[in-house]
Length: 146
Image 1 (cartoon, rainbow, N blue to C red):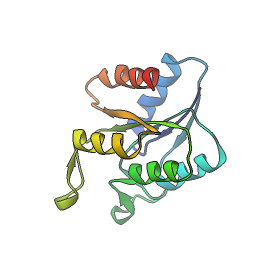
Image 2: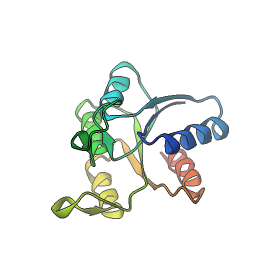
Image 3: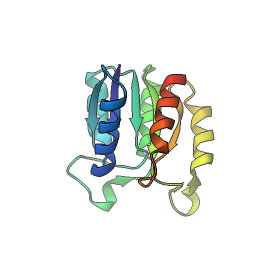
Image 4: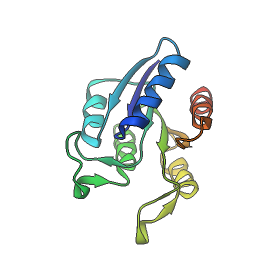
């Protein structure tokens, strides 16, 4: 199984990668740390699954606040849909509420919107909590059902 993990936060990425390597044998796992590096990986590879952080910087080496997109994951889902890609996507985020002001949305609301708009790719959302291992079972469950 080929999996792309798109995650900018180093500790969270390490935990995901370690979990995937120890739990799901015979996987090929690629890593992207930003919106642009994810698009480059997708342009050059096919994946079975993508574990996608919702909030990402534009570039790997650019963590300026102005270049951080709270909903970059939606833009990647838009790209998959536009190109009729077959990758199945699990959104993986530590935030229960995303965005600010009029763009503020709870994770359950965002999950429902993604189910409707990206039904060909999106298989669910996993809320990451560093103090729990529940996210691991949720990822496996989503992939097995995916």
